[in-house]
Image (cartoon, rainbow, N blue to C red):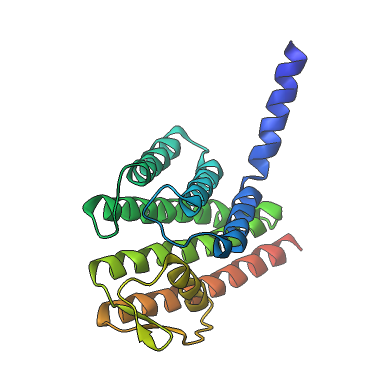
Length: 224
């Protein structure tokens, strides 16, 4: 019996050691699969289930203390409740779920970034933690764009047409192209509020990459 408990404990510790890898894998899987699914987020559909899986991966990545579990779990519970209940786009419940989701991603980003950058050596966890934070930036800003588009329909254009409600897939794609400062121009901010958000994301992406490179190089140099 004790051997079984020991094996279970060892397996759990091994899974915990790879928690950032799990989160990165969940992000990549989401980005690969969501184009094949319905892009709307206002009902309990495949995209909502994938969002739940992504949130659970983020919770697993930050669940080092009971306080983190309670905060992250409460936010995830709000998102899930707003998904299960009837939430037509634009309703207060729909917006509440989006705000809670954005808050969960921000909380997870802060926790992982502090843990990664407080380490004194470069390891697998450091690399995957940095990638996980970058991915969470992309998802966070995509949700913020969806909140803005819900509050101010027509904040973004898709192609040559002004869309009252761009799909989630459009905004997620736009978020990651903006984060990497690629900017293909097929999705465009129209209102001043949208432009301000995009500028902030540009700055976030550029500043983060500069900090990551400087930090990793500094840790690697100190090891030598």
